[in-house]
Image (cartoon, rainbow, N blue to C red; front, side, top):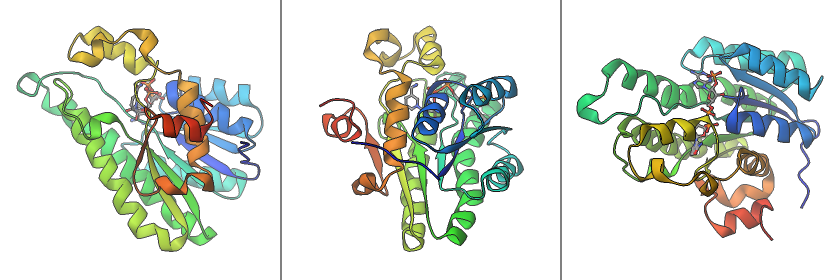
Length: 252
Ligand code: NAP
């Protein structure tokens, strides 16, 4: 199976580390122009310069609509179009039971995890419509459909992301814009380091070797950007399943 993203432009939020960084490097390897959007400008600049001239770093806080609108505009200005949006930026901190949680921090998780995805959809869909199509990959989680203690902000926001995937696909399919979600399973990134140090709920007690590498999630995102992934449109593909891992080419 070969993935060909030549001539495509992908905007990836949360590309300063972890899954977003891996997706940007892998999609660029498949020929795409990549726009790396995150708050840590030093990291996105470094990664973009390592990727080369087909990469652009844009400072972006997805909680602010103007920032993501600017990232979409920069993608179009630099590369002429926007074919793929990866709504990947997300936070799990601070992990806390509802009774002890900080209302402002809970609010901030909603701003990033839910409103950030809505902002990406709102900014990208009109551009993709004018171009005659596109693909949007929203990064979901098993937490979208499983309750976990200490994660009320995360479970509730990821459930909302799954519903945004469904709604956006329903609204966009007639305009040849595919919207699909990825539930990657547990991935060896900073987010899992934070989960481990919390000591809260069974996910924190997983062995590090239970997590998949971020490159697996990056490969899945690249594959979901292709027409081969159409059967998963309008919902979440779980990378925990053998079927999905085989489709992506991670196992034979
Ligand atoms: P990570 O290593 O902590 O990286 C998170 C990324 O999101 C960083 O690049 C961060 O960049 C960015 N980000 C956070 N807040 C942002 C904001 N307001 N605006 C723009 N970017 C922001 O986490 P990860 O594991 O790669 O997670 C990526 C996605 O996968 C998240 O949506 C997460 O929920 C999901 N996921 C992860 C796992 C897992 O096991 N790791 C499992 C299921 C789903 P800056 O801080 O530089 O802005």
